Length: 407
Image (cartoon, rainbow, N blue to C red; front, side, top):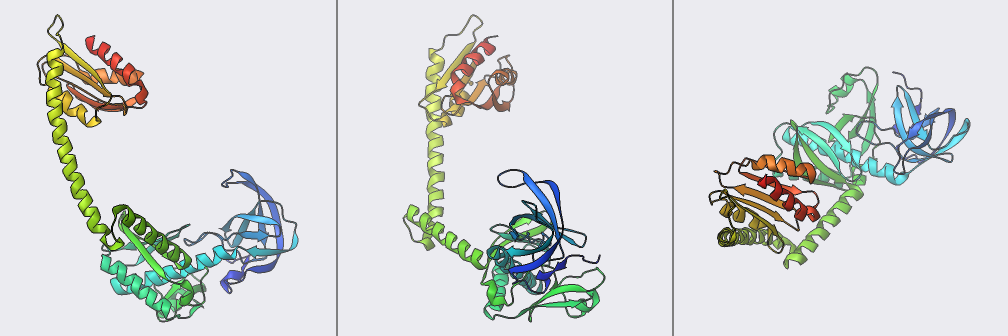
C-alpha cells in the first residue's frame, strides 16, 4: 500500500528535529499511561521522523509542538501519532527523544548482526525479535544452541563491531535483494528497504539503525531458554550491555563478600554450601523423626481414651519447628483408634492423621474446616495436610477440628 506519511527516518535515522505540516488532529480514545488513562488526540503529519511500533522495535518518544507523544502506530500507509493535547493544524515542529532513539538503533542493528552470526555459523535462523526495556530477545529455530554456540555468535558479532564496518540502506525488489544474499526471504511486492552490514548481513527492514557497527558498542548474550519449539536468546547492546555487565559483576562481588571468597571461587563455595545444606537437612530430618517418635509416645500415653476407646490428640505447636508436624502425626497415628490433629501456630501448617482402623474421614473433616477457616490443602481418609491463609486463626481452627472429629 502506498504510504501517505513521508517517513524521514527511512533516509536519516539521526534526524532529531524536523518541520512538518499537521494534516489533522482529532480526539481519540483515552490512552493508557503509568498514571492511568488520559485524554488523547490522533495527529497525522505530512512527514515524520517518529518511528511507530513495528518489527519488534517500540515507538519513539518526543514532542509535536508542545504535545507529548503517548503512542505511535501504523495504519495502512499513515503514521498515527497519539499525543496528550490538541495540536493546531498547519506548520509544526517535531522533536525526538534522542537517548531512546539511539538506544533502539544500537539494539536493532546489534540484533541484525547477532542473528546473522547465529544463522551463518550455526544454521539457526531468527524467527522473531523483541526489543525490550532492558533486555532484547531473538527466537532461534533449530537445535538447542550450545554454550559454545552462544559464546561463538557473541564473539563473532563483537569482532565485526570492533572492525567498525559501514551500515547502509539498500533498496530493491525481493528478488533483487535475494540475489544479493538477503538473510530473510520476503514475499512482498514493490521496492523494499534493506539494511546492509558490510560483509556480514543484508536484511529487509524498516527500522532505525546506526551508521557503522562500532556505534553498536558491544553485544552481550545473557542466556538461552526453550520457548515452545524455538530457543529464546536474551542479549543487550551498547549502553545496555555496559550496564548489564557492570550489574552482573557487582552482584558477583556481593555474593563473593557474602560467601567470604573471591568472585572466581563462587561456584565452588555454592557447591560446598549446597552439600552442607543437604547434610544438615538430612540430620534435621533424622532428629525430627526421633523427636516425633519420642514425643508421640508420651502424648499417646498421656491421652485418655473415650468410652469407645478412641483417642484424639490435638496439639498447637508453638515453639517447635514445622518439620516436626509430619513425624509426630505419623507416630501418633500408628496407635489403634488414635487420631492426631496438629497445627503449627506460626505458619498455619497443619497435619491430621489417624490409624487406618478409625472410621472418621479426615479429608471430609478438612473440607468442613476450610469452609470456615480459609486455607488450602487435601489428602486421603486417614491423612491430610493443609495451610491456613491466616496463621493467627490456628487456635480456633484446632478447636473446630477437635469438634468435627468428635462428631
